[in-house]
Length: 142
Image 1 (cartoon, rainbow, N blue to C red):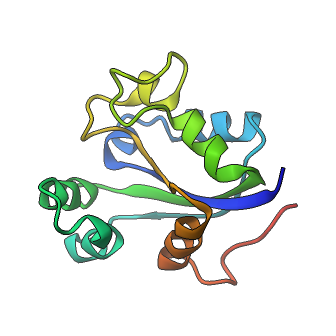
Image 2 (cartoon, one colour):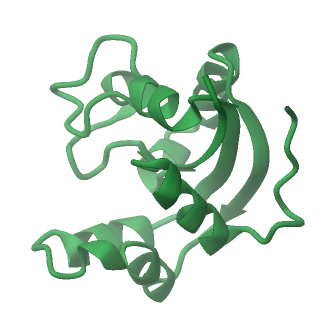
């Protein structure tokens, strides 16, 4: 199993619920380490740039509005097969379909307000991490 890095964003709904600590605990207890972190309030333009891949999709404007509606915690995580492990811990995008005990099953309200974002591939993880952090901000712990 390869050591990888992936991006995680604790979204405005989960930040507002004050469940940041529980989410980070789940990552750490399952072998992921936080190697960079930044609390920020995304502008609509920053959210739009991050989610540009979805620009032609019908949910794009609502997604950007949601992601810029309050503070988020952006993190780079590192560990064995970090991309897949993070996605497993998050659970299905729709919290009603998420397995019991996953972050979304426990903390998400809807398919839109679904608590967390996670990179979907190692290639996208590198792009997404670079969107928020420069190389000096990311401190490998492996």
